[in-house]
Amino acid sequence: MQTIDRKFVFVAVNPVNKKFYTEKDAVLLCAKDMAVVPALRAYQLACEDLGCNQEHIDSIELLINRVSDYQAQVEARIPDTVGEEIPRCIGGLGVGD
Image 1 (cartoon, one colour):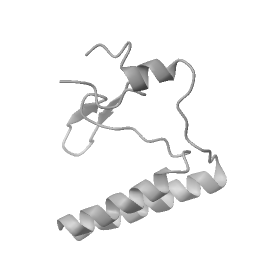
Image 2 (image 1 turned 180 degrees about the horizontal axis):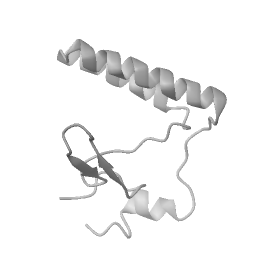
Image 3 (image 1 turned 30 degrees about the horizontal axis):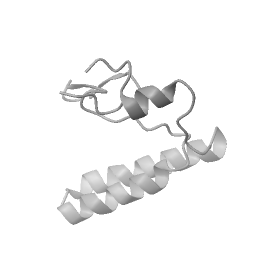
Image 4 (image 1 turned 60 degrees about the vertical axis):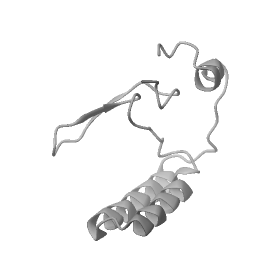
């Protein structure tokens, strides 16, 4: 299986169901990136169209609010892929698939 997220190497755990996720099966978005809120809005609409439960839709709205607050209070910037990230993100070099 190929790596999904080539920009980051990470381990995340859902504290409720104890499932682990990595760059092999998940995507990491940085709260500072100004494209995240619009991406989350699109995700929220897609979830509504798919018939996701209201709690999931509500949790996305709360996430959007937290990201917006972070950007207003801490940092907001235009996302980029630069330097040594380019061969890894575009060409998959050093990913190890």
